[in-house]
Image (cartoon, rainbow, N blue to C red; front, side, top):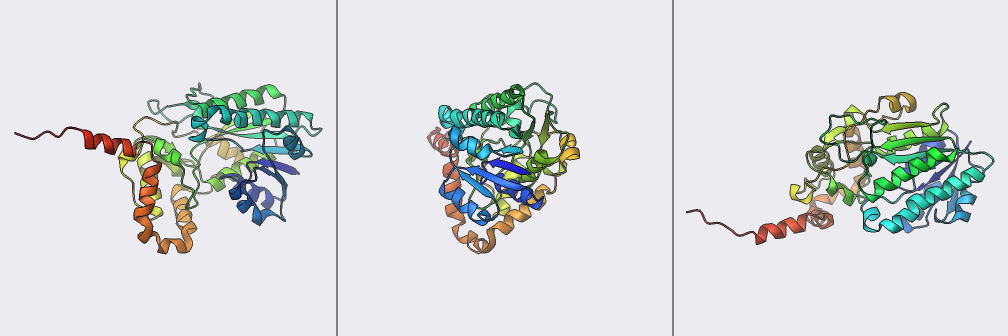
Amino acid sequence: MRVLVTGAFGNVGTYAVDELLSRGVTVRCLDIPSPMSKRKARPYASKVEITWGDIRNTEVVARAVQGADAIIHLAFIIPPKSEQRPAWAETINVGGTWNLLQAALASRRRPRIVFSSSIALHGRTQHLAPPRKADEQLHPYEDYSYHKLTCEHMLHASGLPWVILRFGAVPPIEFGELDPLMFEVRMDDRMEYLAPMDAGAAVAAAAMLPGLEGKTLMVAGGPSCQVTGRQFMQRSFDALGIGMLPESAFSQTPFHCDFMDTKESERLLHYQHHSFDETLALQRKTLGWKKLFVPIVRPFIRRKLLAMSPYYAKRVRAKALKPQTNPD
């Protein structure tokens, strides 16, 4: 069996590749030849087939799809870039997915498409009783979630075999890859974490197991990964030795996250291998020798992180400009 993984050297992609290789699958990787992708690809050079190129290029996509029995489609522009440059992001997210589907339709094998979708399609749901379910009415509200919804609709209409996985929060665990999207999570928001290696296990299983065609599954870490935004941030930053950032650095608007009903996806895919606590322990391990220097560079790291927040500087400035009242 040959499986194509798009976005193969991204946050989830390498874990998907590892899982597929462990199952004896021939893996083909499609990604852009960025410095980071090239670096991440080095350990796989003799283990996988690599097609370098842009998913917007139909010739590149056709070459990558040729001979594939299944396609795990992870290549997607996510927030904040998808919101800062929505027209450009759409050419990759929607246009790239269209190219992939057209190449799959032209293939003799008519491969199964495993599409990584998102809980973002459900919109802001903190006012509703959890958990979120796949058959609920959807309420996308930003470009990224509209792109995902458009791609889901294209899959439905394609005539190809497909499986849709709507992921919860899947932030990277590697030190140095902290995502500015974290500042959009409100402190009291319910959220359900998914370790990227478990996300990789889920997409690999969805590509290989029989009887999954036409299913839309909610995929997240399960009860052991259900936390509030505050718990997630505090424990993650503590694990890295950075310490919790001021709450003024985070959004006060509900975010598209929530607890999720993952009973069916776990029953079918068997991917929930890491609790939130176990993932934090792995996160600490990724520091390696660097943890010796964290206490020294901690103030600089905190300043760098706060500079990534779209809220912190504005609120500090607003507080400084607020008139002071003298008590009588």
